[in-house]
Length: 403
Image (tube, rainbow, N blue to C red; front, side, top):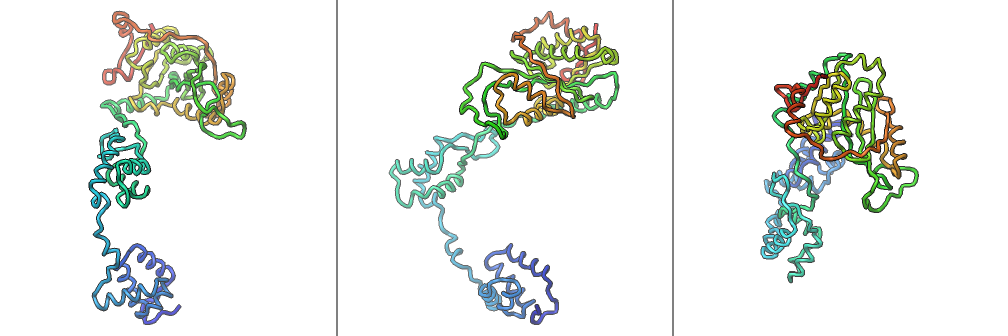
């Protein structure tokens, strides 16, 4: 298209750019820009500008008049810009609304902003205001009331737990120590990762996911008598996963006996090649670096295997870095959408999952472990003599040599 009086013809790309620029403006600013483009590229013709850029010629013509006279048309929106907010027009009603909201409010658990989270809905606020005798214009529609509540600092949001402290002073040093140990590719060192997963309840309970078969779970999780605690050990070098489902509690004895079962599954040749067993664990209550019963059982395990045991702990709030946690994530995705009606179904699903191309070795334990077992201070002193604690990370790096 040939344009009037132009020394700089526009191509389609340039027209699109100018349209985009105009779309980012509003009011008098936009009309002024359109008028300038009209004078520069369209010879001052509002009609020609409409053809080229698609802008309404009446707005372009108004922009040309504003540019010529220097008088800017502000429009009705500017006349009404001084309109007071609802809470300014009805301060007494607003105060009543605040009192109603405060009765339902809960402070943001993190205390990092002044916003209060409330269970009060806009419809309920309107109802309660009317119960107080307010009617007519002073009581707004539900959509407007929601905006007013938000503006007053009350939000209809779910209250969440405060975020835990992410780091302790030793966090970086702990990870550096673990990485240093992992860099040593020593065939005489067996690297394991061990942890327990959340208790699995047996029954027709919803676990998320999708299924093409029967998908009707119970409408309420009323509690189940049959529960199992999975304890897993993954060999970081081979990728082999070992899972034992315990029918009792998550205890130190349960974890260590699962480790003993792993040891018995190895061949004689594999046992002879090993000198050190490195075990990564989180800082759980049943296996921490100060849990007496766990440390006692680990000393016994070192004596039984005649191998050195290296316990490497992850810092608090960082257990997700423990390799076994990735296996639990795969398992959750694998059996989501399944109704685990009985123990056989649970075991069958675990056996069909894969980690690094391998199916896990799965067992079911019916042994009941006693909770709350601990040692006296005198007994612990003898155990402590067997523990070689890292002088810089005494709770996070412990070496146990066989007697």
